[in-house]
Image (cartoon, rainbow, N blue to C red):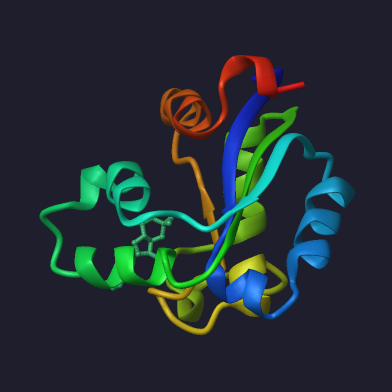
Amino acid sequence: MGIERTFSIIKPDGVERNLVGKIIGRFEEEGLRPVAIRRQHLSQAEAEGFYAVHSERPFFGELVEFMTRSPVVLMALEGENAVARNREIMGATNPSEAADNTLRKLYAESIGENTVHGSDSAENAAIEIAYFFPASTVG
Ligand code: CMP
């Protein structure tokens, strides 16, 4: 696969519990380095636009409410096979199904408040990075 970029969010539950350093440290230990990073309190429009693909799902309102509750940390991560690697490090969407030592197994409390988001494909990674980071702000 070679060197790739992926998009990551430390969600409100992670930032509220001061897990930012632990989570970024884990990415770095695993060979994924932040090439863009910003803390931001998402507006409703930003969260709805980011998750537009889920707009018809029954949990959409809950998801947007959660993601706008308090600030998140937005990141572009770079490394070998970064999209798949990030998903391995995060674990399954539902923390009760996540493998041992994954971020969601370690930190997430529910499928809704699952601490981290990661792109599911290289194509979506490019779209998601561009949604939050103008090209000139990615190192
Ligand atoms: P994420 O990887 O950010 O992508 C979409 C999010 O929707 C997902 O993580 C979950 O946090 C959330 N989600 C998925 N399924 C459910 C569900 N059944 N109930 C509440 N939230 C969900």
